[in-house]
Image (cartoon, rainbow over all chains, first blue to last red; front, side):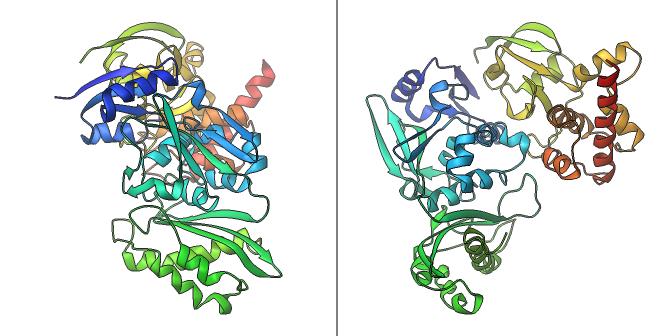
Amino acid sequence: MRDFRFLKPDGLSDVLEARDGERENARILAGGTNLLSYIKMGRVKTGLLVDISRLDELKKIEEQDSMLSIGASLTIGELLESTLLRRQLPCLFESLKLFANPLIRGKATIGGNIADASPIADTVPILLVLEAKVRLKKKGGERIVELSDFFVGPGRTTLEDDEVLSDVLIPVPKEGDATFVKIGLRRGTVCSVTSAAARVRLEQGKLTNLRVSLGGVAPTPVRARHCEQALEGLTLEDRVIAGSIKALQKDINPISDVRGSAEYRRAVSEKLVVRALKQAAGMEV
Amino acid sequence: MKKLPIDLKINGRNHEILVAPNETLLNVLRDRFHLTGAKYGCGIGECGACTVLLDGTPILSCQMLAVSCDGREVTTIEGLSEDYQKKGGDHPMQEAFVEEGAVQCGFCTPGMIVSATALVKEQPEPSTLEIKDALRGNLCRCTGYENIIRAVKTGARKLKSIEKED
């Protein structure tokens, strides 16, 4: 028997109260693009649906001390209308245009895309190279966690069952640029087979302060730290990086599924990272 | 399951109804109001056949809980054409789809037209790329998209000339 109840909270305190009392049974409903599918598939059979989609407290985007805070309930579509985001984090802004399609973008939220913890979440790779953090609130407290420490496995995070992801915190980069690229089976509505993001600064033509991340090649989106180390200080020329880019293989552990084989993902990861690096460095469009 | 009261404005008319917490907007529209223009396609937000306007924005009604729509306004394909049908015609975007042969089985068509009208409202003279971007969430498995893109352009022109007359 499926049994759902519904809560339209008046404020965030109602949400935290519900999580405190009902724990994981209080299911956070933001855009619903994932949760409603889980309900239809029977993966979620019961619970208190806590609708945070229209909660003003979670729909703010603001900058403080060179840190941008993006409310969890902001939809991808709303973020694409934010002049603050376009001005301060154009790389994130541009990457959101690759997210699903306009119908999904109108509902799916940035908090939901993160908290759902899909290995192919399309907002996550770029947030990882921007070294974003997430703020997790609970009744009477909060903590801030590095996004790279937030994911545990597919659909699993370090979010406790009395906590709510309230906002994403992103340091506004002073220099260097970042970019996000993805490979899908078509252009619209598509789940990434593999995705990558890179952030670079070129100093006398050499890669410095390199950040690389990938989606769809491990149980969680990953920072590719071996790859970052191997490429640091090199010039971004195909013949120079051809050997070092292989270090990336130590960062990933892809599986074969309906969208692509593990072998393909290993091969395409290197190509995607190079493409992302060149785009971020302004060498390719 | 305890049902909850909501106020819902559908195609210009106010309704007060009781809905289950897990009841989708699409099911309410189709099963209770017999507005069967919006279709149940994939049910998981991939095909766009269930597209309707919520407060003027195109959304997937199969991915929307009815209870979350309390106090909001829904426009379906039936609502779009209502005013024009009183005058004996159809919505200009509907006419354009027919004229350009952009309809084969018709299952995707209501969603296509709802998305297209929302686009044209924002961008009265959309380019091919803008049309492709706006329709990326609406899949057609019969005809290919060339006729559909042409229809949106034709529909946009028709709407513009109507506006001029007014």
